[in-house]
Amino acid sequence: MKIAVLGTGFAGRTMAAALAKLGHEVVIGTRDPHATLARQDTDTMGTPPFAKWRTQHVDVALAAYPDAAAAAELVINLTNGMGSLDALAAAGTRNLAGKILMDIANPLDPSQGFPPSLNPVNTDSLGEQIQQAFPEAKVVKTLNTMNAGLMVNPGRVGGGDHSVFVSGNDADAKKAVTSLLQSLGHQDIIDLGDITTARGPEMMLPVWIRLWGALGTPDFNFKIVR
Ligand code: NAP
Image 1 (tube, helix red, strand yellow):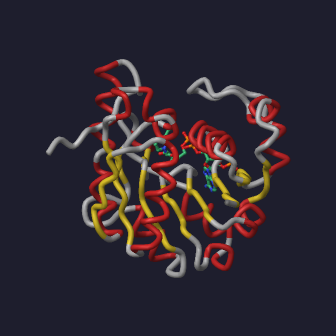
Image 2: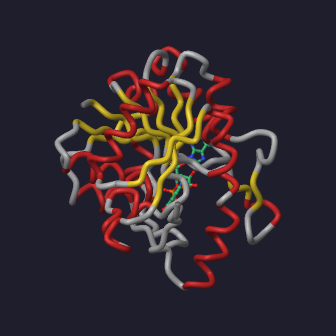
């Protein structure tokens, strides 16, 4: 499948590499490909410059948001949650219309210091805001409750025996996303309901962030026991 992964950070790169390895035709979307390739700094989380990563992943293309989205059958949002609506607007309403839009972003607002707060929260979610802004896209919120390494390789912890959620209004889109999740190794995929149910997984982030601090590693996940 032709897949656009919007986002050049650790999560976008990890997802793009895994999907390319599964045989998909993957392009990463960014605001400005020249600027992205020209960056030379390792970021505060230790993520190396994109150009360095790219030398080891020549099978993944790089394009501006609209070009990446236009050519794709499936679009994945892995942009910073505070910039996701802008990134998707840049990708273009027409380029998203009728397509599955897997939203993995978290609306974490760092402006008031650590820990970041959620915005929107409680009575709204980023997933819903994206669906509202792009009504012809089939938004499915998923995978935002775990580290990118686990998104693409759930077997890294607990033999893969842990849970992932899907939220969205379109049953067929959720079915397609479920099958993509299974191809990545996910076993326990829980359909929470329509896109308003994205509020729950987004509001798991404050717990996730504190668990990261308490456990000293991002390699853990939630398991819904029933
Ligand atoms: P990030 O630093 O949060 O996001 C980087 C991407 O966001 C870049 O592609 C950047 O564009 C884009 N971006 C930032 N501000 C923008 C704006 N105003 N307009 C358009 N694009 C903008 O990287 P990340 O850590 O990989 O996380 C990406 C998303 O995945 C986040 O929403 C995060 O919450 C979610 N997530 C991450 C993980 C993880 O393990 N890291 C786990 C779960 C969920 P350029 O390419 O142009 O610089």
